[in-house]
Image (cartoon, rainbow, N blue to C red):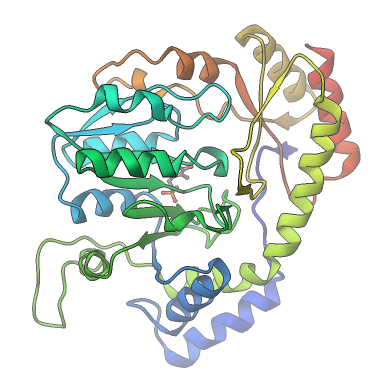
Length: 357
Ligand SMILES: *Cc1c(COP(=O)(O)O)cnc(C)c1O
C-alpha cells in the first residue's frame, strides 16, 4: 500500500539512545533536557532566534491569537487545513475568507484590502504546501491598517524566502511536527514569534500561565511537548538533508512526466527555497480527479484530496464567496511523496494519472 505520506522513522536504536537521557534524569515533561536540546538545534538548523516547541501545531495557532489579543474579524484563507479556520472560531473571532491566487494557491494579497473594516484585527494565512504567501505585500497592508499577522507555517519546515527562514515573517509563525509532516516528533509543533515581549507572554501561556512555581500571570493552557516527543525530533533532525534530497528527486521525476500536459502543477513563488513538502496536481475538472483516484486506489495507491473542502464552506463559519478556492479544492489531489518512494512507483503513479487526462 502506498499512502500520500509516509512517516520517516529513524533507526530505532538511535531513538533509544536519545531516550536514555530521559531515563537517566527520570524526567518526562515540563521542559527537560531533550526539549531544550531540540529547541537549540532547531534554532541553529533553521537560523532563527527563538522557537518554542509545543505538543502539536494547532495549539500554537490558538495561543498566537490569544497572545496578540485579537478580537472581531480575522482575514484568512479558505484554502488550508481546517485547523487554520477552526482556531479562529475557537478563539471567538470571526474568520473572513479572502480568495486565493490560482497558481500560488496562497491568499490573493490584492484582495485583502477590500475585506478590511473597522472590526478587522489581524491577517492569519497559510504558506500553502510550503509555498510562501506574498509576505512583503501582506506586511505593508498590515502596517497601513495596524493589523497583526500570523502565518500558519505548518508545512514550512526548512523553507527560505528572500534568503531567510520563512518563520521570520509576520508577528508569529506556527509550525506542525505531526508524524505526517516533513520534520516530525510524532505529535508536535512550534511557535516562532518575532518579538521578545510576545515571546515571554507565549511562554507563560503554553504552561498554564505559570510565572514561577507559585505565581500566575494571565490565563494559560497546556501546550507543552514531552521528552519522548523531543527525542523523536532529535533522532529525525540529522536525517533532514537525506529526506529533502530524496523528496527533491521524486518531485523532479513527477515534474518530468507531467510537463506540457493538461495538468496544473504548483507554482512556487519567486525567491523561495522550497522544501518539497507536497506534490499537488490540479486537474481540468473534478470528474478527472475522481477517475484518477479510483484508478490509483485499484492499484493500492492512496493520494489525498488536500485541501478539500474549501474552508468557506464549513458549517460553523459565515459564507464568503471564494470561487477560485472552491474550484481548486474540487480539482486538486496530492500524490504520494516520500523521500524513498521508488522510481518505478513514481512512474507507475504518473502513468495512471496521465492515462485518465
Ligand atoms: C497539519 C496542519 C495543522 C495542524 O497541525 P497539528 O500538528 O496536526 O495540530 C495546521 N495547519 C495546517 C495548514 C496543517 O497542515
